[in-house]
Amino acid sequence: STPPLHYDLRVRGGTLEHDMDESRKRILSVMDIFQDLELKQQTEESDVITNCPVVAHFYLSPSEDEKGGGSQEIGLTSTIGRELGFCAHHAIHHMAMVKIIALNFAGLSVDELPPDFGKAPSTIIYDRGNTSN
Image 1 (cartoon, rainbow, N blue to C red):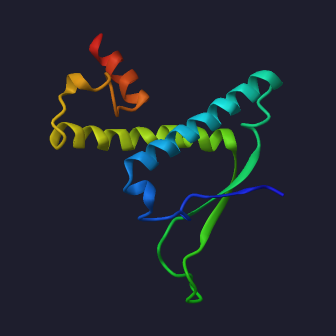
Image 2 (cartoon, rainbow, N blue to C red):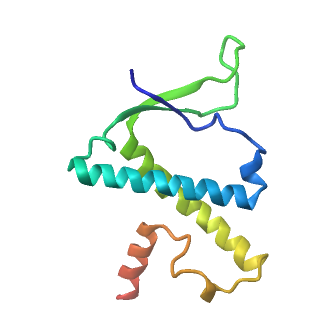
């Protein structure tokens, strides 16, 4: 059977949202998982893992259904690779917010952040094309 992936079913207000050390440990753990995934793909010489099917579930509305029941999750077929691509792309949106906080509340300057931090690749490409005109 196709494994489910539930974006909206997660612990809210948990340790990872409040404890920097635990958050750092989790990030390092996830990095290890991705490095293992990369090694498996290199040794198997295939993209079997990223082509693995999943069903991505999420809520599109907080509203109850027409029968008065609770909100319903929507499930869409996808692949591990597509979902990882989505997460990487969506993270840029979060980095843009981090940049605003870092510059306005944490006292960092633009020079202390990587170039184009929080800027979508499509925007960078667009900007490059417009600066040469």
